[in-house]
Length: 334
Image (cartoon, rainbow, N blue to C red; front, top):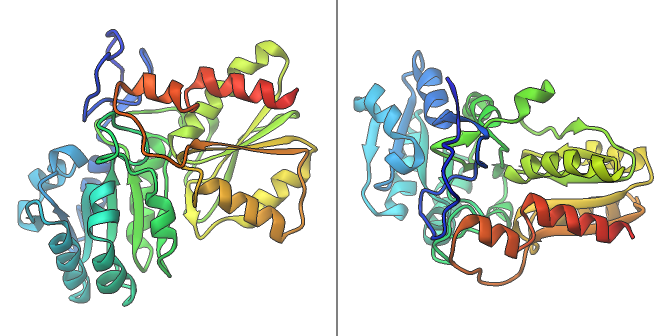
């Protein structure tokens, strides 16, 4: 059931479980956990593992529904990935959850050698991607996409909202091979249902058209791009939004077609470092296909260790809030 984000004052201090939902925004509770429970109902090969973070990745719903298929590995992420690989070798389909920083930084070698090298059917679903916590660099996975992109054969998904997440779960489960999916948990914003959107693994989707600016985005930055597009209508700026939920394999054909479609400023908006993320993927794609847009700008996180603090403050500071992103786009259009 959809609910509305609690109408409370914005946080003035950081919080591990802070929501990215704006005040009054429609949200859906635990879409990942609910989708996994539904999908696993008649598929006994689906198992769930976590590193002491079931509640904070919404895997506690799976634990409650299928306790015999749930494995609590403790705060041992390397063991988590090794065990998931072993289960996959026996024909199971493990969903392994933790925080993105712990999977990518702490367990990278195990993912690379145990899971990916043998193309094992493990689904790694990680909360707190990018700048979705105010707890500082120890918990801000601002380089996770760059790291996981470098692993051969790794499919990477960066969903926008609750609808994206719930539709992605069965598709990544059915995909043969390792998957890394960025995870939003708790009360997750719901926006894409207003645009007749459906998630398709490996496909980018035009969410709205526009004549002046094309925002190419992934993750919750697609939500921000849609907010910016609506806000800029008042200034007679027409903004298109192209959502790229699959980072790898990348839908180059759709991106090239959209850039060629009209002579527009291209802005890549991402909740990730400007090093190694969506912006560099798009830039490389356009260079490879010899496509030159009217202009090209990156709206991502800086190549730096980010501050701790309240999420609204940090998003303003690093240029990925709706208000600041809108101002940046108007400056780039001058």
